[in-house]
Image (cartoon, rainbow, N blue to C red):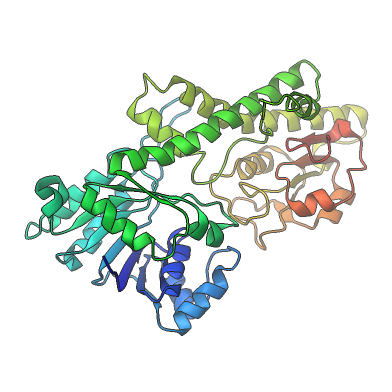
Amino acid sequence: MKFESLCMIGLGYIGLPTAAVFASRKIKVVGVDVNQQAVDIINRGEIHIVEPDLDIAVHSAVKEGYLRATTTPEPADAFIVAVPTPFLKGRKVGDIPTPDVSYIEAASKAIAPVLEKGNIVILESTSPVGATEKMAAWLAEARPDLTFPQDAGEEADVMIAHCPERVLPGRVMYELIENDRVIGGMTLRCARAACDLYKTFVRGDCLLTTARTAEMVKLTENAFRDVNIAFANELSIICDKVDINVWELISLANRHPRVNILQPGPGVGGHCIAVDPWFIVSETPEQARLIRAAREVNDSKPEWVVNKVKLAVADFLQANPEKTAKEVTIACYGIAFKPDIDDLRESPALEITREIVAIHPGKVLVVEPNISVLPESFERSELVEFDEAMDVADIQVMLVDHRSFKRQKKIETDHEFCVDVRGVWNL
């Protein structure tokens, strides 16, 4: 099939780069977002998120007339839904979180009035298994004058597919094009049509499957990574208990030709690895025992880090009895969810720093070179440069191994008053 126009629902970290890449291939793209400020910024040829090379692509696409943003869906040949899929609020510790697909439902109801026979609707949002079928049901309910794959099969007026993104923040513009793409259709015709659309720019292989399998592929990829990170995080807790340097341990163990242990950290963050495995657990709680255990290990790591900071403060006060806790300054290095990006979503480093700010009576300095303003709830803390924090702070807390931190001189204070969960100073 040939596609000349596209309506992209959601202009965030995935939607906007995808829209820009399609527009660079001379497809007329209308991007839709509920955030009027983001819409205005994009229509000026600028971007509201940080991603290498995205600014150039958006500026060019807008200038040439192939990309335009608005708050209301418009008719198109194809529709791609790239909206958030968070958890429902109110989760208690130990509970299995419930996925929130209300954004997908809202997007479905928004595009339904402008659907036409021959259209394809693709869900890109990482979703629980069965979400694509729910989207098709919502569309069918809103448009009884059209037929959909769940009822009409290959003869449906509107085709439905699921094509999850598989990109790394900081490399999105490259990986969108070069990575293989899993394309799951509610029918084979749907999958083939979606493949035709993505082949507009994808250089990797487009792998056809069912919508349910495509949904599960994305969840499986991130659950696999989560389990492996949990092993490393659990090792770090064990090594701390028995007085072993975990970084040396992993380095030596990885000399085995069939062992490749990941590096531990403060937990797991971001909008994928920290979220997607719960989608599997919520659907099959009795069967997903290992996946749930890994999630619980990684979710509990921030609390362990905070306790290490408390112990470091106590040790410092014992060594400096003339000082009070209010006179102790703590520096936290990094609050992004991973190195060298500005994305704070689901960041364990952010959670840890926020907790330190809440419980520590003294000054808390934050070093995060990728942002210019601290988030709300950091009123009693201050965003500073690396050198200032190094010179002023009594307790040093390394949370994110940004490249700029690795280039700096090694910590000069006593390691007794340092909490390094990324191995920057402990190697």
